[in-house]
Length: 351
Image (cartoon, rainbow, N blue to C red; front, side):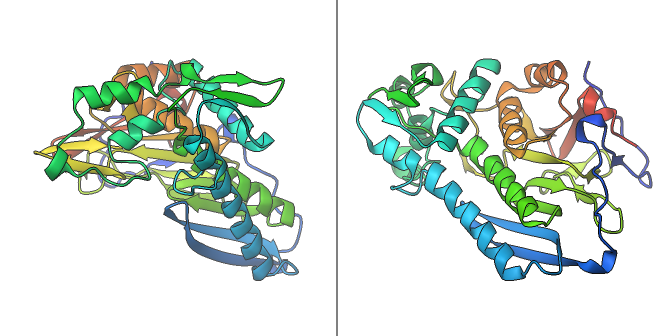
């Protein structure tokens, strides 16, 4: 059963503390003065990124920077729809037939297909044609003044070239049989994959206590040298008043991802159209869910489940959260207010 949080007093603090699913790590096994805090930032994958990492004094800033840049570039060369020579870009431009991917890319696509089955299509890596029709793809925004919203015929034509059920994955050969016109779009999971990859790279280098933030998808590892966790604030909806104080999360060994209808969207004739599309209807989601934050040990999975719950809506989305014991915070837009709903697993973390 979903936990509904009533509005606390203005002065009341709301903190989320880890449970066994996101358990604290061991403290660093070196003296405090042997650690150096590095702060790095930049742009990649169409968004901003920033990292705070405690590293041994012998690990230089330049080494960290090169490793992070290499990991992000690798993600772009695999999954970017905006890069024609990426693996996804070349697949989308190709005709029908069998297609081979590198092992890591194939693994992410296979994971996306598993999630599609689990969520009944709320996660769908094969909506590239539909996303392009709505103006959220690499072709750029739709010219609404000249063309208006996509017509039913346009949407139906895009749906004919979309959908995870049309993909046939041959695991024994590592190939995917591509139908004519189908286009992959794994943006709903790739950013989380990049967060995980950068975090793993930092840990291998010795920066075992760090916080990675790529476009609002976060992952923390380890305790700081002073034994403090990484405190992060869960996103609220911009320009809306909250009915409860902000939530601060003690993130230690885990990730949090937020999907919101305010990130990539356009307005037309007084109505908001967000980039989160429902592959079953061919339309942007319209059920009033404005934001979903999900905690998970893997940023990739947190990213995917946040998207899925946005697509499923209030009841079915929270049913999924309860079935999987996911810590989830959902925000609904009602006039000038945001209303909060927490899953049982999230409510159990509330102090």
